[in-house]
Image (tube, rainbow, N blue to C red; front, top):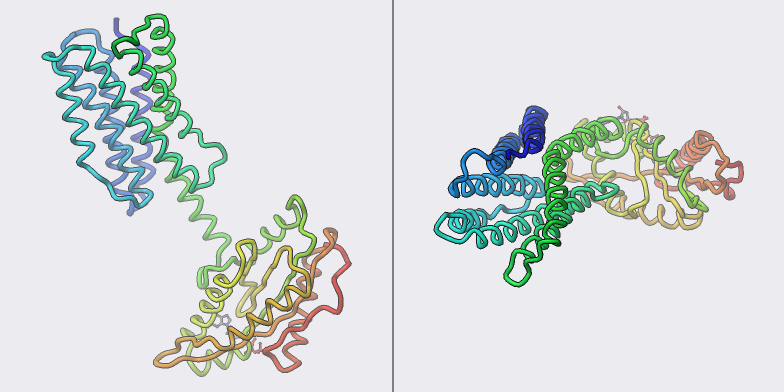
Length: 380
Ligand SMILES: Nc1nc2c(ncn2[C@@H]2O[C@H](COP(=O)(O)OP(=O)(O)OP(=O)(O)O)[C@@H](O)[C@H]2O)c(=O)[nH]1
């Protein structure tokens, strides 16, 4: 009897492969991957249908269906490893395909073919589970669903292999494992065919987020990104006891533009951002507030800590040689520093206060930091 349930599974896999192929059309760097993914999905779908067909009970057809299934899964694994910039090794895959073809031929016992097929599918599922674990970890997905599904599939194939081995043939257990194997394998295969689509959507979202929240010249957060970060900081659990906030401005920046040209001015801004990003902790935030003005957030830092840190950065930046045309130039910055240590205070008020202090620093001769008289208790 032909297992009719295989048809919607095969059709879904083909449709998902085709949708992924269409979705990736705009991403020129993924053109090869999208073709391989579609081929993989088509191979798996055809392999599944051939495996379930009742018309010809011909062992050579099993060779073909196992070859298609294995080839398809290997193509998906190839795309997943390429997406992680891993080197692809073709030889083990080709060897596995040849051995599978050989062991499924009518000249060898069916039991050998069954055991080998279970072993090789356990291996392929294990590899897919591992690759998905790396991807799901890299994109910080909440729960690693695909890793789990392919992992369960691996366990089911290993159980099938153990039960098929001489001495392990227990029909009652086999009857229990077979439906589980069908469940995990088909769910993992259907859901796994979405893997590439998810990566494409993720990339698009990241691109859009970058466009919306990042400054295109320096790569720092822009004003909107800063606002969102401020909001997240206010809502962080547990709340930070202090957050130091500094407004920074490059000194005599107009002169830099006038003397060395606008391109050199741009380079100064890029170097300033690179310098801060390299010197700060992971939780610190450096954002371009507008023009040559920047905002620094140091979560957890008291006013005294932040002043020490910022003073040291100010000295180091003043010593930094920035390329300008044939030579180099040196720049300095001034800053106004406040501390938010009360969750009720309005952030705009603090930024204004830091801005006022920045202009005090400018009036005081530049290349210095003006610090709020005492920790801010007006609430943030
Ligand atoms: N190259 C470059 N220049 C910019 C950019 N944004 C703003 N500027 C320039 O930054 C300069 C800011 O000049 P001012 O506001 O007079 O400040 P300043 O010369 O730095 O003087 P002080 O801040 O008082 O030390 C202006 O000439 C702007 O054109 C940018 O993205 N790239």
